[in-house]
Image (cartoon, rainbow, N blue to C red; front, side, top):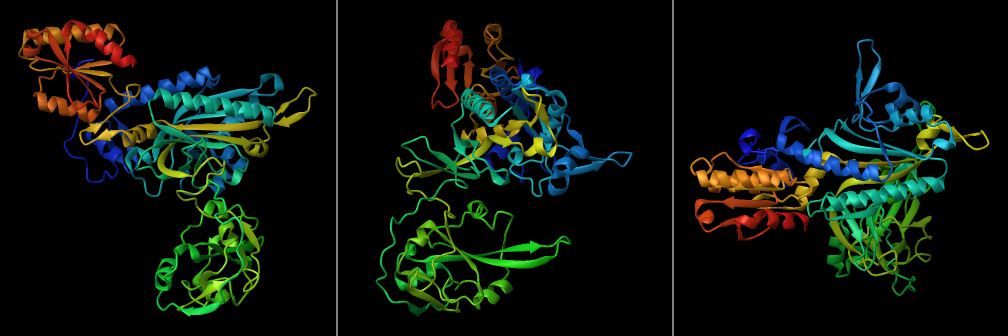
Length: 581
C-alpha cells in the first residue's frame, strides 16, 4: 500500500469533547470521525484494525468448533416479548415501529433470535452440541455516551451461543470458549486477566470477564500474585479479618462527637484507628400488590467496618434483598432511628430493622457506632451485651489490597482493567422462556442448556490504546496494527535513488506477505515520522540518500528510543525476524 493511494487524516490536537486517552488518540490518528453522540464513522485506518481483530476472532472461533452465521440488527419485538425483555429492558433498548405499526427493536444482543433459531433447527440430541456465532453491529441507547468507542451507542461485537443437552456438556462448551478467548487475546498481544465475574440475576457459578489491564480501566480487579486467583471486585470474596471475637473489655459509653458524622472524623476525634469504627447503611425493600401499590416496607441496617465499603452486588444476594432494594429515604431513616443520617447505629433503634453485619463486623468487640442521636456515638459497643446478635452475617464488603486471598495462597493485590470479553453460562433462562427443546434418546422433550460468549470488537481498539501508548501516540501490537511496517523515504519525490530503493523494498515485503505501507507523499521527515508514531505502526524503516550511499537504512521499533542502522541488502530478512519475534 502507498500513502498516496490510501487515506491519512491526522490532527495535531484532539477535539474538545475527547475525554480519555484512547478517544483522543483515535480521533487524532484519523481512526474514527464523530457522526453523532456515541456514533462514529470508522475511517480506513481504523477499519483495518477492526478487520485484523475480526480475523483473529474468526480463526479461533472456527478452530474451537463454532459456526458463523449472521443475525439481523433489526429484530421483531415478539421474540423479546416472549422473554419479557421488551418490557423489562430500560430506555437503552431502542424500540421502533414500521409502517404497519408493528414493534421492532434495534438489537443490543441476540439471545432471543438465536434461541428462536435453535428451537426450530436443533430438534434432536443428535444435533448437539452446537455453537453459533456472529460479528454484528449493536446499538444501546446510552444515556451518556462517552469515552469514544469505549462507551458508544453503536458498536460491533462478536456474540456466540452454545446449545447443549445437559449441564455437563454445557460445561465443556464453556471451557472450550474460555480457552478460545485466551488464545484470541494472546494473539492480539494484549496483557489481560480472566477474572471470575458476577452472574447477576441469572445465577450459577460460571462467568468470567476478560479484562485488558490498564491504569485507566473502569473495573477494579482483585488478584493474588502468588496464585491464579483473580476476580472482579464485585465478586471477590472478602474473608473475615478477625478470626474470633474478643471478650468485651470496655464499658458502653455515649460519647459526644459534635459535628463528626463520618467514621473518619469520629476516629480522628477519639484518637482511635478507623478499623475500630462501624459504618451504618440503611436500605429498604417494598412489597407490592397486583396493582403495583406498596403494601409493606422493610428497613434494613447494613454494617461494615469504618475503613471498608459496601458491595452492592453482594448485598443484592442476601435473602430478602434479592428481589431488589433501594436506599432508604430520610423520612424512613428518621422514623426508624429517630435521627438523621450521620449518627446511625444498631443500638436503640425506634422501630424494628433487619440488621446485616459484614463478617468482620460480626467478629468485632469494643467498637464505635452511631448512638442514633445527633452529635453522639457509642464507644465500647459489644454484640450480645449491648445489642442483639445480627439478623444476618454475610460477606457484604469490597475487598481491599492486602486482604487474604480466598484461595489461601497469599494476599490480594488490586489493579484496574477494561472488560473486552465475557463468557457466561446461561442455563435454561432463554430456552425455558421460549420453549426451546430437543428430543432426547427416549423421544422426550428437554430444555436446551445455553451459554453465551461476547467480545467487544470495536471496544478492543480503545482498550489496546489505553494499555499501550506514549506521548507521541498509539503503540499497536503487530497483530492489531493497521500496518506492520511503514517505509519512510526522505526525498521520495526528489531522489531517484531513494524512490527506487523504497519501491523495491515495498514490493519485496509485499511479496513476502508483510502488511507494509510506503509513505510516498513527499512529506518533511519530522511531519512524516510524527504521523506514523501517532498512528502507532510497530516498525519503521527510513531510507535516505546519505544512508543508501553507505549501503544502510535506519530501523526503529515503535517502542525503541533510538534507530538502528541495518544493511540495505539485509533489511528484508531483518524485518522478517522482527515480525516473527
